[in-house]
Image (cartoon, rainbow, N blue to C red):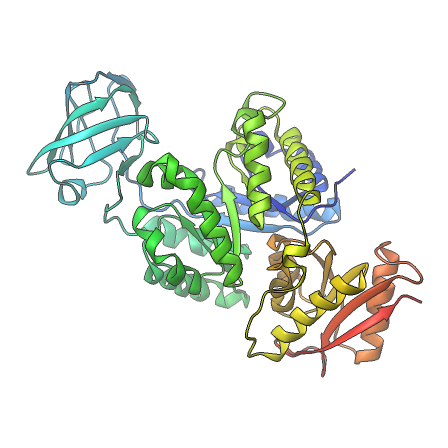
Length: 478
């Protein structure tokens, strides 16, 4: 049985979860968003997988969102003659942008040709997710001469980060631009942009998405992956032009240091919620479940803390893409989220914080939360075209479920990522009284309310106009 919870689960599709029946069970067990990782596979693979997701969701009787996660710039070393080398502390190692032959113990070529211009003597380079540390001694033409500070095994095409950030690689590559066209071809609900440095990177991504999606009359949500040190001070401007952020703790930790990440995670989640944006917490959340059937205590705490911080969603990467236990991982994560939510104190956010609201629809959304909280309503119902009303409501902690009724499938899928929002499809084009009656019938048919239950409903009059929410009604189910 699926556990009722507010926090959403993002699961990455991969070889371990590509069986249609397994995917259907994962969706039935609580996956809300399916992530397609464009770092792996060809365009046609992603098109087929997106179709498989839509079919599996239909069989499971639940709409899910599809998130296309762009690869971003490849800041990596080249290949080695033997596939890998062992680097020893104190040895010299040359990163050579001009080298074409395979690498060895003395040096290796670079996929990222701009590295010699991005570094200077004294800089620290981190390879293979920070497991190997090199100090730059000198830059000679296209060669970066380094000394190994922390050694280890270095294999083909491992990533390079610079401590403190500062690599100039553009966020959007030619491959990303082609991948955006592919993703818009199957109307991905969200596009996640890797390594944005500033708001301009996100604005450019939005323009590319909008142009590619125009023939389908579609507009995806844009998620900025916070994984560069230089993006952290610009968080507010990046949030302003995005629909949400992903706290991508892997690359971020390599650039800013592991110890800084927990506080940054809390800051990012808080700011995203304050600015009415969604936030996904990602990387190594249930890492041990790639090979083990149960999570570690530390992983349970990690997921629970992200939930208590107020994240909209928690994300699974290799756990569901390549792990041994994809279904069990989803079940465990759902249980942890539900238990953490049960421990939350809704009082701290049941009275929406003192805000100045300049819009009628926003005021109605806040009024619905306040009223439902104090009357102990069974449900909050938002009749919405664009999903904005449900998004605003979901920025506040409240233990009353929010049901968003929309006539648009694209809006229903997009709302699958919003915390504590259960999106349902319903035609709202008729007159107000008929729509309100239909809404109550919809809720009763699904067992959400029963006769005598109190619920709060918001809608706009005239019906069917985006941004037109101007009515709040308190109802008792007949």
